Length: 396
Image (cartoon, rainbow, N blue to C red):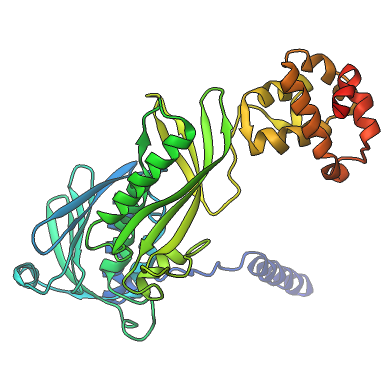
């Protein structure tokens, strides 16, 4: 009897222990059977969006009330800055069933606003909505569904709006990308090309579609200044590109686009605000100058060299092929940062320079001595010794 009780007790402990070691995992996802109708419809719409947006390319079209259309191919890695993850916002809306008659009445209405279409490349999957309505249509595999998607926070929170506004951001980003996707004749000098590109950018801002909320009343090219040049392959330059922008309300909602980054200067007597970007320009495969990147600062030409691993000879070669910032302080800095054994090869590398180039490099190395505290203490005497036969150039 005692043995039977012992066996029973052991089995109970084993079963209890197993239960402790293998607890049931909590299911954080709401089962479909427990979803509300709104959640189910939102998930359906989000899934369709993701299907469209996950492709290498898809199409976005905005139709104005007068029938004018602006269409963009959204290409992954090119003009898709705000595409990823946008489907998550669909759950912020309250979804309900609408009818085809509701949609047709909206399209016939003078108050519909702009019509936005997000579509797969083959046109078999689409999402459509209007700027002045909560109605949405989904089309997939020949089946069209009609819904209302109401934002319960619209009118209560600053950035809470219709689904149209959420998706229109993709189209606005495409316009912004297109504004700066300009080229200039490769025969132009960097200074001439910078001016040409600035004129084109200003023209693109002036002629942006009416539905773009940041479109200025006017845009004019301002001052351009090339500050870094690489003459190797591919040829490159970086410049400060100024624009003069006139807005209806310099401190209003349209200014949010322009105030990002460095922002706008105060309006002048004619109502124009200064706006500037640093722009990196590279010759493309057709031999034309093309804008590769832009931002508020920190741009330099990008020669095909790993500075931290470069030899003295390679850095001197890049020195010959550059003008401006990289020429004046980046190359001298990395030369002075070389191990002393490698730097001892500098005089031999300088034999390929003209006398004027050797004098200039020596002068720039001396000018950058006070920046070597990060890489080791240097004196003028140290530099003169390293330069060897070129050391006398410091006194020339």
